Length: 306
Image (tube, rainbow, N blue to C red):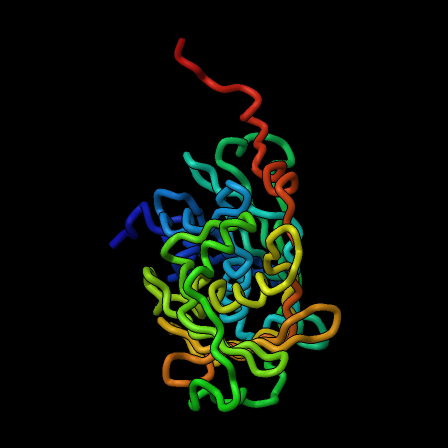
């Protein structure tokens, strides 16, 4: 029978089977892979729970999830690096088109990746695509699975107060809704932080390598620990490998690295490893930068009833 005309297969594409992506396509004769999808606050209402300086923006953890999915699509196991170059604001009305492009494999088995977005409101405008993130994918490093976090909480760790954690975050300019309010407990041992994550609401965690809301919550204590005036958000990832999918709760160990970076070991609620991040760099977002990214060309004209 002919395929359903609303499905990707009807257009010569393969269903992506991922909440943030709809279809995948191998570009003939190029060795390239293209994954595409659409985001909106109507189809993905939980994204509205991530507000920075009054603007709903796609969390940096979602870009990493897109890269992990792209790596699996081309038979790779590792995000060598991924740098977020521009915030992606999500409009109150309408949607955003996504394209995740993976280049051909080089002699080292590495493939370049780029993530672009375009507002549906400016789909016909020349040069409307924005490069939001880029980096490279590669084979597993071969270092084996990270250490288990089965013994929990860790010996010698001091419990920290988290009752007003999200109130403090809001004072710094980040408003987290239920999908991102996952911090349940935090311990400190020397320079290490240990975080227990269980979000109030989590949509289909089993369909992600790691749900963006879950991973964002694991990072939040490290991001808010600094004395920056503005909130810090994920900016550059290096050496990310997935060791399990579909976790609904997390245990996380955050360790400081060079240049203010963090390394993370993440496990599910039983302590079994799920994700290892060799290096995560965070950067402060000031209000002008966020609000500037949310200014679309169509906002020059609005319809007002008088």
